[in-house]
Image 1 (cartoon, rainbow, N blue to C red):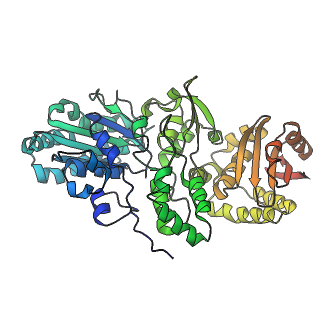
Image 2 (cartoon, rainbow, N blue to C red):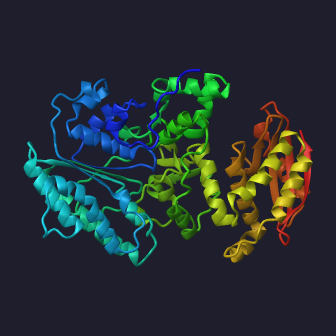
Length: 529
């Protein structure tokens, strides 16, 4: 077996990756292009997508650390290697603060390492005043009279208070005061780079930086964070081969598994799809394909947004929207779509130039299953482990071709579901529209098996659920307050099974009747073709 390489999982410092001999996918040509593209740049990308590594690479470049870049693409582009003082602020350390005073104290604390290097004054009390002093003194000490400012996760303190009418304005004022000097001190700044997850309105956070260039959807930098297909096939080919050997499958089969699990992100209308870099490296390190992006769970702020805007959680498999629907400032949102896109749960899948419209969807299987797992506790009142036993029994029955047993397992499980406190009125409202049962089926089956899909569009409408097994394809239709016969008839009348008839596997149609009072499966009918 080939020797595994060192993977930079959890390492976001460029110098440590290079000096430590870790796997590095060379993005330095794009880093150089960005550094010379505009003076003030903003880039939004999802968490764990390499933003901090990009920040660190810019830090090393502007610090003139030429030796770190030997053999990399930037060496063909950069000739001068000028050295500038770099003030690097990681605002993620200011998350989860209860009051605006705590936020100010933390931001001031973040200045201390740079004050030790460039000096401080007792008269500088607020974070903004401290930053003014730092930039002024550092520029005076600079050979070229200018400094570089890089700010990571600029939006971190605000995400926790998005809909807190009391705390959000207070936190916003603190952050405005911090960022205000960046425009006023423009002559002293060589380059300023700001990154985060969300796109807060320039009118609120960056009210004085009216020359900030947003490259979030600029095709020139579409793959500056993330792994492209070409990079997987070249720089990471050896790693894919090693993982394939460990799984006992071919290189081509492993490539396809990685593509389904981690590929599919597209941040501009014309860029190629890219892989999640954190998950890909973690899969190579752990020798296992898994859902690594969600190790810390679905962010609380996102769940709050979905509930706040009463988002249809099953509507995200395919959305056709205009750019103005999802590329909005976060603090001007009237639904959760912009945040779902900006945080990486949805990505661009297609662009229609004629109508200037986009198709958004989940990027890959990792996000689809992780999204469902994160919502199960909030929407169904269940713990993940409570669903796993049922899921395993259901899949085993279908794998054996025993549809009757699978339906008995489903019947028993739905009968055990709690009547979620706090959602009582909501469940009453949606019961006649199969809403609660569709939510339940959608979340459970999306969370625990990559062979199941719900709410699939077809010519005749939307199929409630399709399950792909080695021995057959199962097409399910649910009916509340109606008969299993009617559900089965709907599958035939609307042609739900037609797209799967050329697959070569038998197609099994399952009509399911649900009793609205007992909230469980009452009966079912099965038809094989």
